[in-house]
Structure formats: C-alpha cells, structure tokens
Image (cartoon, rainbow, N blue to C red; front, side, top):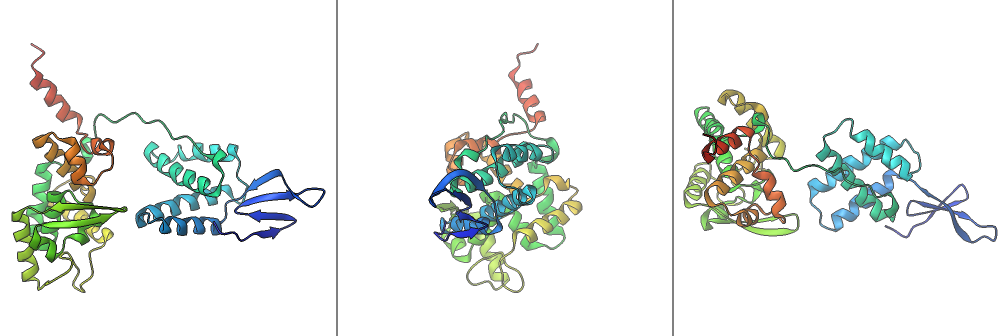
Length: 310
C-alpha cells in the first residue's frame, strides 16, 4: 500500500478505509467504510508482482477481483455482502473454482487490512475417481502422436512427446532448449522455485535431430516460423484440432492432461509418490495425489484382481 491519503466528502480515505472526523477534529473510527476500487486492485496486483508471484496467478487474481468489483456495484464491503458474493459464486461455478476465487479475495482483504472479511473455503471431499470422459490414457496418447506424424506435423508430435515424457507444464516448454537437449537436463524456473528435469537420451536425440533439421542452433526448440516461443493458446488449439483427426475425445486433449498421464504412468511403475512430487515440482504430496486419480473403471479392475469374491 502507498501512504498517499485522499479526502472525499469530509472522509479521509486511507488505504481503502474511511475514518469519520470526531467532534474535536481528531480521527475516530466510528464507522469504517471499506470500498473496493480499481485503483486498489491495481496496487495489489503490482504488489504481487513485486513478490514475484507467477504471471498466471496475477492474471487469475485480477479476473477474480474485477468480478467482485462488478458484483459490488460501488457498494461498501461488509461481512454480509462478502458472504452473499460467496453464495452467488456457488450457483455458477464448481466448488474448486469458487475456492480459487475466495483465495484471491482473501489475499486482497488481508493486504488491505480487512482481516475480518476473510471467507471460509468450501469443504470438498477428496475425489476418489475421475470422469472417464476426461481421462487421457496411453492408447489415446499414441493415437495423437500417430495422427500428428501422419499429418506431417513433426513439431506437434515431438512437443506432445516432450510434454508427456517429462511431465512438463505447458508454461515450461520454453526451458527445453538446444543446450538442455545437449546436456540431458533442463533447469526449470517457475513460481519462485528451481528444479532440474532430466531428459532421457532417446528424447534428447530426437530434440537435437529436430533442431538441426530446422536450423535451430540455440535457444528454445519449440518455436514459430518467426522464431518466437509457442504460446499456451497456440499449443492448446493445435492439440484440439489434432484430436479430431486422431479420433480422440477433444475433452481429453489438452496439455495438462499429458502431465497427468506422465504422473499416473510413473507411479504405476515406481510407486514412489514423494519422488514423483519432486519430479513434478509440487511443494505438497497432496497436490500430487490429485494427479493419480483414475477412473472408476480402473478401480473396478483392481477390485476384480483382489479375488475376494468367489
């Protein structure tokens, strides 16, 4: 927050708070008025940037706080209003989305000094199964690779293999460079953390062969014709178009699902969730557990193998 104070209509505005003047001219907190403004939101977002929060996080918080600002319609904040806002979110968003919006609001409230407005998160029972329609399996993965190869889309085929083979986030593709392929390891810098991702020799050879053929001597390997790195939206669109040709449900085909497939495959072989959390760059094993949720069909097959029913 800045120390700049504004005066409006006899009230002194201090960091989003209004203090009424007492009878003797001194400040008295007879009625604290808490108003959300676009200016205070922008200041908060700048503070987040200074704290080195991820750009995607800042953009997400910006959308959520603007949502709150529009909903308030210039009304001063009260505990009752924040609770009503929370209830309104539950009619249009999934519980996980509601909680992410509440996290954005709570962070802003804390920064403004409005701790009494903090909202409780929705309690969500841990998911046991995932929707089969959204579970990308190994057969789907191979279909996507084959379809890309058949269409002559070498870059897309190699990109899918790299995302899945290393368990990368789509935002981490830029760290797959010629130098990384040569050394067999990439240094990923995301969310204020640094982790080393090992690149298998077979994938390294593929990456270097692709780079040589496309005259990419240094820097990022996955680039556009103009030499710029591929954007998240571009990768997403190319994968969606490919799903139709490959005969794979488009709902299953998006970059992050490749990361989930990597996690399930790794765990099925090594059964080491702590190591998997390190490989994926998760701070908490609880986050990694979410990646290992499989469909009810897989669970049913596991029950059959128990042999407990004659």
